[in-house]
Length: 212
Image 1 (cartoon, helix red, strand yellow):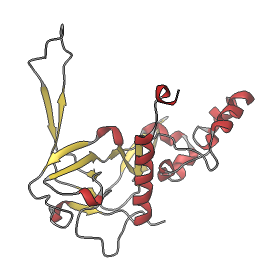
Image 2 (cartoon, helix red, strand yellow):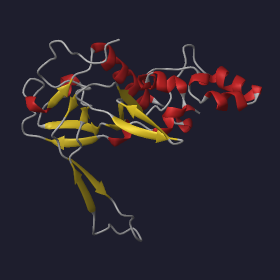
Image 3 (cartoon, one colour):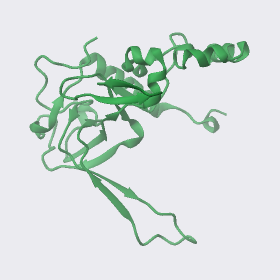
């Protein structure tokens, strides 16, 4: 599967696009005291080198956009051969034995293995449901992760659905009228579908109390 649309990418912004140049603000809300509203707040303002558009394609416009920073993957993923084979495997459902380090799977009791296999749906289930991994690309560069003294060069990056930020931008009028200079890469149709499906799964989970 091609992860990016390299040939004739759309000039307009799309869901899942990698963009640059946007500023994000994060308010830090202090705890309230005796029911009184706190009087002082701290706001962090930063410009991530890369970010991803999470506004659905048809909803891009009205001078607003939903973004999340594109960041380095987790170091401990290097321990899992199934992840290392292709870190974008994390974007798709997987079998219980693929989701853990082989040594940890072997150490599990037969009862625990059976319990996990019984809970797994046909074809597997999502793990790290709040995370989605982007494939390497020359535009994204590489970085190093060290585990047990061994360095590994990584090209993959990820987004965290828990880190969505809304920004206002006067240039975002509609999908066709957006800051073109901001767009760096566009997902292929298949990769965008994977992002949409995992994001849907992330939001549609039901808490235990709602299922009783």
